[in-house]
Length: 150
Length: 150
DNA sequence: GGATATCTTATTAAACTGCTCGGAATTTGT
DNA sequence: ACAAATTCCGAGCAGTTTAATAAGATATCC
Image (tube, rainbow over all chains, first blue to last red; front, side, top):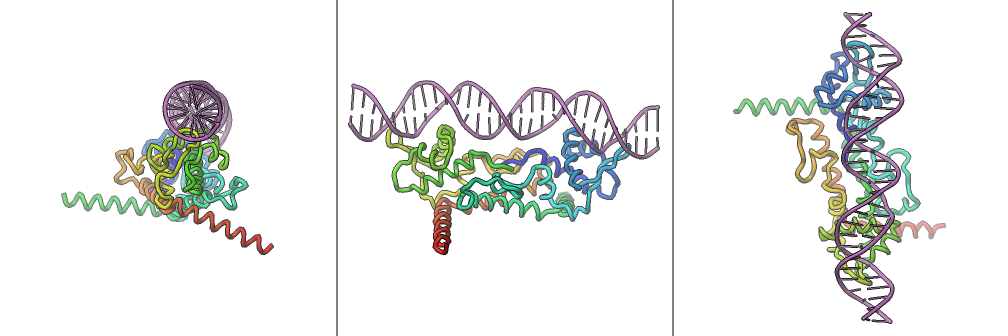
């Protein structure tokens, strides 16, 4: 039940883009440095994000990437689905075209995996990049407050 | 974010044992046949379940396995943790000895994975083998009711 | 034209998955 | 005592996936 680096790195990259929203195109190189990810590997991940419109690219010198829409309109679930595929602890409860066995109708374990899938989707779809930015600001504030009392 | 066959097969096997609770030791061979799993492979999975006390073994002819405690006292989460390891979408939020990076304190993506982990644990720990038996009986009843009206 | 980027495809080493195989140890029934 | 049934244990292995790396083509700015 592990997420691969695709989802992890991809979300970090998207969060990085959200933090720099409005600053023009952000190069993969700078993202890779800040988030400590291989630039070439990141290219592959971002390729998928571009094809689904979650980011837009600007080619050439001073080029880079910008978010495809407002941070508040991009859910973490949107990103994870692009990078990791449809959310599904097992294939027979996949969000899209599930490959079911013939026992699916009365399979008791299957209903469990459905519940797991739903709870994961619910969490990931309840958080947007805007929420993450807000959360980061809050954490930063708490840190400052803590420092003040030392 | 996929479960391996270890967790899937293991849960099926435990459910099978629960369905035959009170009938004495159940052989792996019969479980493997009913659940359509390789017997040798199942051996490996059950080995872990035995070591943690979720099942007890009876060696020799007419031997087999029985549940280590009442079905109502065995949660799905207990089984999955034995077979798949601690629940954690990423290592830094593992239920036991998480391997954190130095940014863990203020990492925004980490809090997301924590929420995912908690929601998964909550689902898996809210369902016991007894619940599954009850669910199966309910499904069977519905099927009969449906047949009656045809 | 040169520097800076994004794109695209191919290759790869290592790890993981899902088994299979062989055999030892233990118990039951004849 | 012996055969059959069964759990136990460890090794091996083919295929897939992961996480990169590499090399170059293409586009844009200055």
